[in-house]
Length: 255
Ligand code: IPE
Ligand code: IPE
Ligand code: MG
Image (tube, rainbow, N blue to C red; front, top):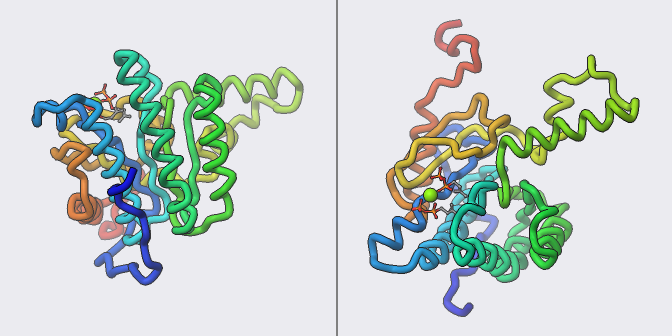
């Protein structure tokens, strides 16, 4: 593991970001396989380099003063890939947590994992639990890792939990409103993403944060995920700043 970049970010690294910084940026990290194929390398190499891009993204997010960074690491549908690739991706997650947890903690990063945990191998579950409990009181960036995550699955899970409470007589169906649903999602307590970035040129959501992205801005960038860097991140934020978020109302200039 020597040679892998460390995540040290000095607290004085905060730079002028030149305008409004989104509170929550969520990234669909796509294109690892194509990055590798373009170089005649196995897909695994793309995934391995993708982990390095996550480290860069975390550093940039801290540097930029972003409070929440969500990264889509493994979707509920990614089980459809060949068993070897699934196992490689599980291995990389374990390696990432084992190698980076101390650094993340030292940088005051809180780690939160969303997605279905029950069906993961016990050793992975233990690592994810450890990452969350070690960093639970950290106050700089919250790094949300969406792993074995599907937006529709998350909503179905919340519906089931609400139905159980109704059945037990703890909840009146008339009180099921937006807040009640949100309180049963994996992302409870986390503000909705302001900006979603997807790399690799694909322009779709792929079951990511289905509920939470109702009013998010989307930026699609052509670069493959392993090439993601601070410059691309800042360009996406520049694009975000040019957007006029209306949330169904009128733009500030019109009122
Ligand atoms: C993103 O890269 C990583 C995961 C989905 C786990 P891909 O593996 O989807 O790469 P492409 O889209 O095949 O290039
Ligand atoms: C979305 O990418 C999932 C992750 C980035 C983890 P995919 O590569 O799985 O999405 P599709 O299949 O192209 O929609
Ligand atoms: Mg893909």
